[in-house]
Image (cartoon, rainbow, N blue to C red; front, side, top):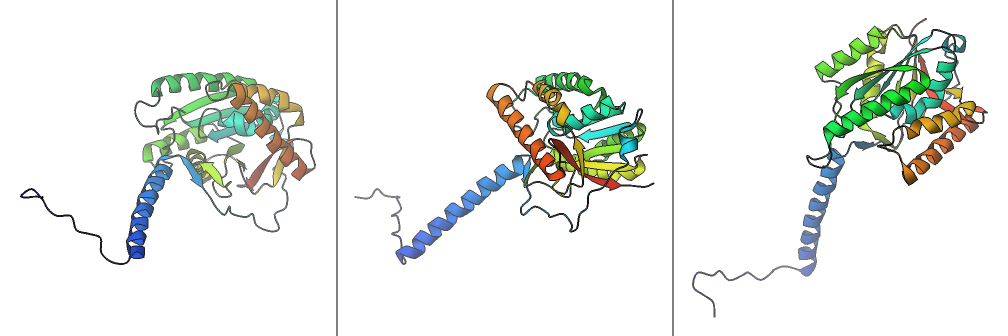
Length: 282
């Protein structure tokens, strides 16, 4: 017996396969919305298939006599505290030993502010990671400058951040500029890496730099021999204890060693760090 005012539920009509297809379609839309939202929020970006380097792509010497000479000015632009140690600390140690003056520009504070509120202590992260970066940079004699951009949300076109980066790069008066490659990218790359590299490369002609050396690149044409610096490199990555410790630190060290051995194999060396070198002017 049906109560007054209650509506009788309509029975499904039409072929069963049409009803099933409609249900699957709804589920697919929900899945795409969820996955798309996660991808939009997550700072990692996919680049597939990766862009291939031009062929032929010969090796180049970015005036090594100048690069490894006393007093050469090196400016490094990275996305986060720990990027320099993770990607190129062997090369930075080599430059330091040759007498280079190194200035490190970190565009974000590494505070993980892309996380939803309540999932991380932004102020504490900022404080700890600043301290870790300053300590690590002492290992290769670099001065450090933090630009304060939002971790995971660095916008290279935002006018204020753009001006801060330009001013910092120009004031450092570099002979060589080091930054992430934003054109020949690995399959997975953090957007702060890509964006900081793009901004630095676009601003490079405004500086005194004669060469740009791009790291985390899939199109390497210059290799620095870093064999004697592995022990120091291994110690430097451990300074960032808030990011790498215990089993994770061991895993990261293994990953870095494998990468340096691969770069070494590509260049006829034991261990190396590879770059895409671009000459800006004579």
